Length: 203
Image (cartoon, rainbow, N blue to C red; front, side):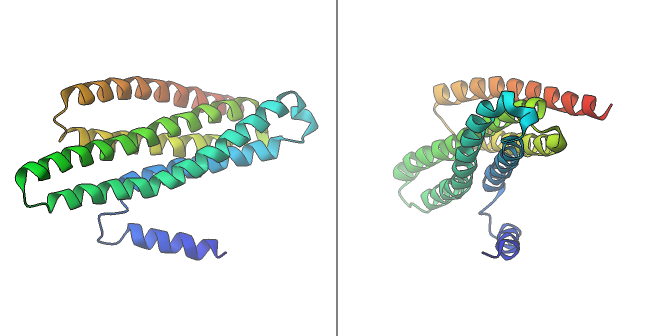
């Protein structure tokens, strides 16, 4: 497997004049990369005598981080599919049918990044533990993993909001906005805690 070539091809595809994959897909990929780094820190902690007291927890976190990495990677494709569904709905000539299909497509286009945001938040939560309890030689790797997930989280929230703008179901919009506000407060709080933990390590 030529990882360098695969990544280069992906970057070229993202930077092309095609609107997909776009920000939503990249947000999911950022979360996936973040989860991969959390997994790395777990692997660098497990088996080390110094960290024996947290080994069982690290094994559990490793399993969850790996699942999140795969899920977020898969969601990058689902986000692109959701965008394409919206574009296809615009092509329908019958106005009533077009509007019905658009509303359904916009809901999916909002729901996918909402799921990305929730999974990125979980990666951030795992990063809080690995930052505080994981191999301290890799503390900045935990930080980078959590910050990548935070970036993915923030990007996903933006993509939820842009699709909510076109959704006519007021209950759906209101509930989603309220949920996002709660998620954002939690993500911001954990991010600050992680940064403070790393800054104390530097002191």
